[in-house]
Image 1 (cartoon, rainbow, N blue to C red):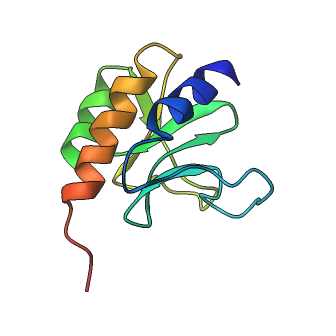
Image 2 (image 1 turned 90 degrees about the vertical axis):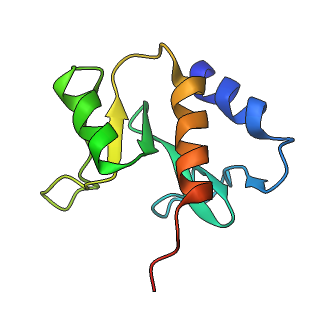
Amino acid sequence: MKAWDSVVARFADEEGIEVPAESRRAFGSNGLKINGRIFAMLVRGKLVVKLPEGRVTELVESKRGGPFDAGKGRPMKEWVTIRGEKGWLAYAREARDHVANAKKKP
């Protein structure tokens, strides 16, 4: 997908970023990572990003995003599916910053 490829290309040379592995099919294997943690991925042709729970709620309520459930039957609190392709790079950057600054769970 052209929009996703463009996002990946923008992060490819950034220090600390891991770009997607093309041949793997496991959860997040097609995602962008920082410090080994996924912050953005392409799922069924849509951008999915990790953001603070309040920001996810804001995006869902404004209809700019939708819940993401990873096939488990319930939405994941810090993940949102972005509607349309507008602004993907900005959302990915916001997610990168969130994940880079988040404390790891014990």
